[in-house]
Length: 341
Ligand code: P6P
Image (tube, rainbow, N blue to C red):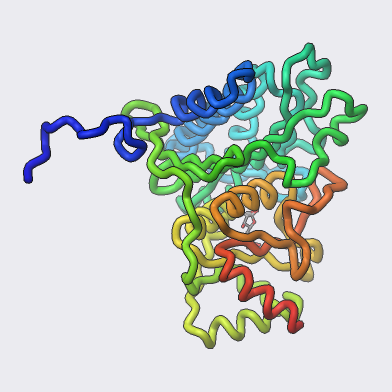
C-alpha cells in the first residue's frame, strides 16, 4: 500500500515523533517540575561542544590541525593538537553554565573550579576525556568524547572531595563518537538513548531509546599485543575464546569499541599489563561513564574478578583501572576464566 504522503496514524508515538537532543533534554526536565534547568543547560553545553568538535575533527587535515603538539598531558601521553582544541571547547562551553561548579579533564592536571558558592542553585561536577583515542585521528579512525556528571557537594572543603565519588553516584554519563556519523549516546539513569547529528540542520536527532546490549555475540575486543603480560586468567579466557569460534574486533579507541558492543554485544577488555599494572583506562572519565551506560543498557562492567567498576571508591582524579565491560553473558564468560585463574 502506498503510504507516501499519508500523515502518520499516530504522530505522537515515540517511534514516529521527530525528537532532537534538545527536545529530549527538555522533555526529561519536565519530569522534574522543581528543576530549575541548570542540569539541562549542562547537557546542552555538551551537545554544542560535540557539534563544534565534530566540525574540527572532520576538517582537521584540511586545516592542518592533525598531528601532535610535541607535548605530553598529565598522563605522560603525547598530546594531539585536537586534544587541546577539544579540551578548550568543552571548558569554554561548560564555563558559561551556572550549574557547573567544577570541571575535571584528562588534559588538565588539576580540576578547574568555576563556582564555589551554591547560592541555592544545584551545581554539578563535569568530568571528561575531551578526545579519546586521538591517536586514531591521523588515520581517520574513530575518536570520541566521554563525559561523566556528578552532583557537586557544596560542603566539600576541597574540589577533590566533591569529585572523588564512586561511579554509582553519577547523575548522567555519555559519549560522542566522531565516526562515519556523529553519534551522541546519553544516560541520565533511566535507560540509554542515542542521537545522530544531522549536519544539514545542525541538530542531534533521536534514533534509539532505551538501548539494550544484545547477548550471544561471540566477539571480544582487546589489544592482543599485550597478551603475554596479561594475568593468567585473561590468557586462559583468550585461549578458550579462540577455540570456541569467537571473533576479535579492536578499534584502539574506547568510544568506538564500546559503541560497537552497545549495539552488537560482545565484550571489551583492558586487563592489567606489565606497563599498566593498574590498567590503562581512567576510572573517573572513561571507565565510570562507560560502566553507567553499559549497566543502564543491561550489560555488566567489572574491574576484575570481584570488583564492580561503579562501586570503586576513587582516591585520585586520574587514577586508572582494569576494565571488563559488555553484554552480561560475555562478561560472565571472562569472569569464569578469571576465577579459575
Ligand atoms: P592501547 C586511547 O588511548 C585509550 O585511552 C582508549 O581509548 C583505548 O581503548 C585504549 O587507550 C587503547 O590503548 O594500549 O590498546 O593502544
